[in-house]
Amino acid sequence: MLEIYNPATDRHLVSLEEDTAESLKAKFHKAKEAQVNWAQTPIKKRLATIEKFKSLITEEKDNLARVLTNETGKPITQSKNELNGLLTRIDFFLKETPKVLKEEKVSAKDAAISEKIAKEPLGVIANISAWNYPYFVGSNVFIPALLTGNAVLYKPSEYASCTGTLISQLLHDAGVPQELFVLIIGGGKVGEELLKLPLDGVFFTGSYATGKKINEQVASKLTKVQLELGGKDPVYVCEDVDIKMAASSLADGAFYNNGQSCCAVERIYVHQAIYDSFVESFVSEVKNFVVGDPLSEKTYIGPLTRSAQVEILENQIKDALARGAKVLTGGKKINRAGSYFEPTVLTQVNHEMLLMKEESFGPIIGIQKVSGDVEAIKLMNDTEYGLTAGVYTQDEKRAESILKQVNSGTVYWNCCDRVSPNLPWAGRGHSGVGCTLSHYGIETFLKLKAWHLKK
Image (cartoon, rainbow, N blue to C red; front, side, top):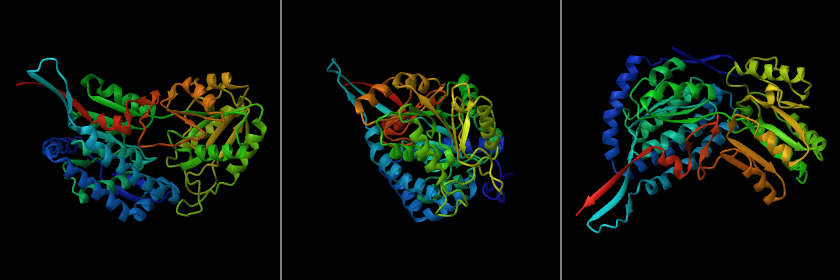
């Protein structure tokens, strides 16, 4: 059995029966049969089914938010924000998928032969999702996968399995066949068994370490693999900014969802001319964050979802202090039930410290002083990750010049920690392979067929 606990209270929530190798095989074979019929279902019917799913999400939003908050510790206002954002994301897929599915006619020199390019679904895919944004990162995969005619074996994170169960129920209530969208329950061992199946695609969101193992496990089968992994996302604050505005924006970018976001700001570099003023303003913002019961509308910082993350944060702080860093606020686990950790800001940091090199994934940030653009660019690129990076400055051309030199899949000017369905979400290096979102993120669930037609 998979045991689910509330990270804010440590209380047991529910026990869920885990899948076995035998149940996974049975589910796969049923999904494979169901996928053939689903692929032949008119696109209008598939669109209507997902539209119904959207309506059910809207009707059940308050309950869905409470369940998400209880099992992950995400503050209730942020759970509701995620669900509201999900509705907009679904609208994007409903609008864009029919365009992507259109056949492409290609001109041929030989008048007797016509050519066209058709797009077909991959088949049966595995969607191994994450706990930090289960609606966002899950829907990036299962919505376009279903709309393009695929079957989905959906394994939510063991830390968001209650939410995963509700997603599955609502999709079935909306008309998605039960054999087509299949819920898989379990932890890492179940995930390993899932990957042994003859899948047509594996789509994973999570850590680099796990993504690397997944890639190695399925590589010999030449299965399509898409990995959305972590980040060590840097931001450079230039000397010409509105300091209060930049500090407020970046404090939110670093600590929203307790810093448990792959695109959360994890490193801040500030021009020496405004460094002291920026740090003062930033710390003031962080000290105003309300830490407490995630079900309270006033709470901004709830508990960490995974208790094991506490040790990682403590080790990063210990290492930083031993190398000369200074804690300006926070720095330790809060003495109360649940996995609460103080929002933490460190200065006098450098790249010899784990804090500035390894992913933190928690409410902790290091702020480093830089002499100017050249040093900032060098430090921003001093990482194995490449998910997002940002620059705060009043000079757009300067921002573009800096960001063109940064090796990152997504870049921001005067904003951060932002995802748009219109733009591809793609990492570089240890941040992943492939992309979700945009029309490229829809095309990833399709395979091409070239047609040569002689009259």
